[in-house]
Structure formats: structure tokens, C-alpha cells
Image (cartoon, rainbow, N blue to C red):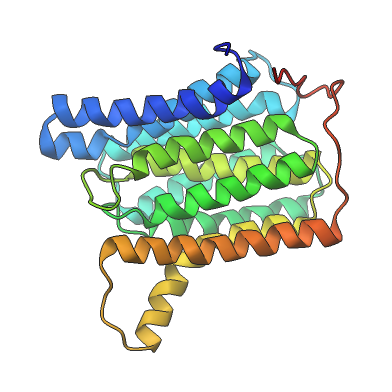
Length: 288
């Protein structure tokens, strides 16, 4: 299999980079600093896999050509936030400002009102991800499940490129998640989460703009990020004690899967499926 094969770029490359970076950080930087910076490999994997799939265009014109720039900016913002030990509120504000720039200016290809709506939904998603404890795998579980759902939606809607990038996101976050579940050995902080959540939002926005995916399906995928809050809310309503972290993560993932299944069902019944088009100007498939 060639190193340029899409499966290598979308699965092996981001997974290996994120996993190996975490191992090196824990070994070389010590238990405290290493745990903080181990998740930065997620950002590294996302940036390099997006460049491998799309390339780096100095003056990007199409939406997909702009994606590596957005991902790189989000990765840099996350690393700076981690370095400054920014509070969760400051991280949310920084990621929200970056998302506003991306959805309103960079990816703007629709009337202003829908752009603002996308930004509001994105702010809720960012808040839900950053609200999860960094020493638990809940945020990783939601991101992995939502990214896989987005990959399925993109492929069904005819975009192999967005499918590939969504898989890359799930692979990079899953690699970090293995260091958090079932036992926490690192922290999933801003160095990974800001890049991961902004990448997911950018891919979701691109899927809505470039394919025939129903907007309702994209919104249901975004709703999967409420899974952590849903699990905690149900537990409090039932007056149950706190479950072991590894069990809670499984419950969060299970609720997220239900949202994803609802999104794909809506796409099946309410959207039009498109086949892959080798002449697609955004991506020429090279599956071999």
C-alpha cells in the first residue's frame, strides 16, 4: 500500500502521530508536563493529515483548500492556550473567535443569517467539549463518534475528501483516547481539543455547503456533543452515584451513537445520495 493511499493519510498517519507523540511526551517530559502536552499530538496529526490529503495552497480559493489553514490556526491557538494555562472560559472565547472567523469570513458561501446560526451552534459544541474533565475520555468519545458519523454522512453525500478528513479526525482523537481509557494517563486539554473541535465544525460546515447532506442531519450530529451533559443529567435525576470514569465514557459514547444513528437515518430518508465523482474539482479519488 502506498504512503499516499487515502487510508494511510486518513487513518494510519494521524493515529500514529498522536499516539507516538503522547508516548514520547510522557517519557521525555515527565509525569506532569508530559501529561499536559501528550495530547498535542492530536493537533500535529490533524495538520499533517490535512496537508497530505489536500496540500498547502499559498492562496487558497476553494473551501477545501482553506481547510488546512483553518486546522493549522486552530492547532496553534490550542498550543498557545495550553502554554498560557488558559482557563476554560478563555479557551471557549478563543476557539469561538476562531470559529467565527472561519464560518463567517473564510468559509462564507451563504447568506449571513445561516452563517451566524452556524456560529451559534458551533459555540454550543465548543462549550460542550471544553466542559468535559480533561482527565477523562468523555470529550474524546464524543469527538470520535461525531467524526465517524460525519465521515459516513460525507461519503453518502459524495465527498471522498471530507470522508477522509473526518476519518483522520476520529483516528487522531482515538489515539489520544487510548491514553485516557480505561485508565487516565494524560490530560486532554486545549492543545488537542481546540484543534479537534474547530476541525469537526469546519468539516461539518463544508459538508453542508459542498454536498447534498440534509442540514438537519448535520445538526443532529452536532447534538451528539450534548451526550456528556445528558448522561450526567440522567444520573442526577435518578439520584445515582457517580459511575466509574470508564463506565461513564461508555455511556457517553452510547448516547452519542444514538444521535449519529438519528442523523444518518434522516439523511437516508430525507436526503439524496450522491456517488463519488472522479471529476470532482475538490478531490480526485485514488482508492487502489
